[in-house]
Length: 238
Image (cartoon, rainbow, N blue to C red; front, side, top):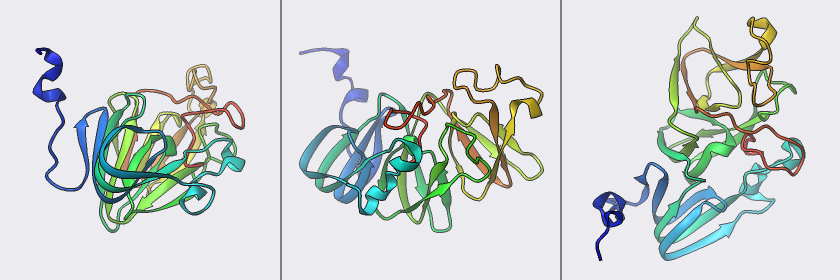
């Protein structure tokens, strides 16, 4: 049988060592030899002896704070030996390696999978108050390990330098250095009308970032929270 479908770029890529690697820019390969955390429902294929365990209301399931955000990002634990392939609606996937001393604040809707060696904590986004439907909480990851994040399209990495604050639509912010100071500015404070800022989300302000670090922005605005129990891509690990 012949087809361009069987070209080398589409064939399964060999992994030199256990852990996460990119099969392609829209599919994550996990060479499992132990334990990895992943978004529930992200598995598209697997080979080998792998167990999938949904995480409930206790333990890691505390990520789900539906009473605060009206939505959640449920997780599952992958254990065993084999290859697991993960994806999220054909979003682009990026790998980030954290080392001791690093801290990364991530929109929960952008987390696809992470090493169980990483620590995480849900924190309120400082300066946002109750004014944003983008979500009040982010998950801050620390420790040593790898995390896979998704973006809708090719991302932009903005460097934030002292005395040069950066402003981002809160619906487009994927993750940022946890050491940055965050805040918000109404559209009328920046001279831009609410019909310009967040015109597809109903948001009338931008997030501000100050300090030293980076912000990763996707070229897409996630849908805002419509109400408790309704799905929104803009929620945190809430």
